Image 1: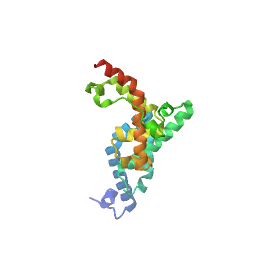
Image 2 (image 1 turned 90 degrees about the vertical axis):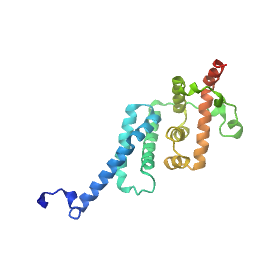
Image 3 (image 1 turned 120 degrees about the horizontal axis):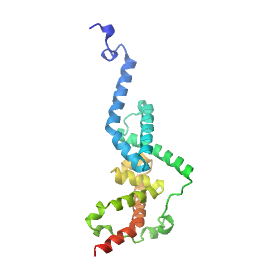
Image 4 (image 1 turned 180 degrees about the vertical axis):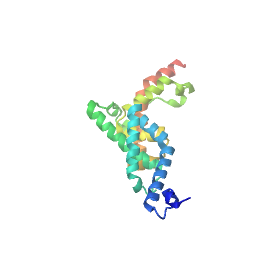
Length: 209
């Protein structure tokens, strides 16, 4: 075949810039295929709306492509993508809350989570509940509402740790928090959710007696 008509990738020494760009594009496309579903699901859990989630995911990968050349592999690709998605979600919440003038539901006052006495408040013991509880669609809706009602600093670590199954270290890397701060916020998030669900849980317990 006439090498004058050959594709540039067949002669990387003649087209070094093209070769680098092609490798960059292929690597990014591989990362996109490997992580798009997981990133979308994370965003959807955070914002609760498929259309908004799709928009944020698109923005996330546009941002990732623009910064792809700066990625040096100091963290895993999926963690790096989560960081970008996480920041985009935070910006989305800021815009939404300004638009709605909405105050997130908070259990801070009755719980007193900033002191040890408040953290010791009694909550329902879920360990003795019937197994069917965890298949209860109504409870699933209530849990999602309770998570959405958390203030962002608690909601973020809960979603990353519990729903995305990240380690404390991974959550810290994505959120920019320290590991101790992640543990503290996750504990408080779980307490807030339990307290909000306590009347429902207690009612189920009475039904099964």
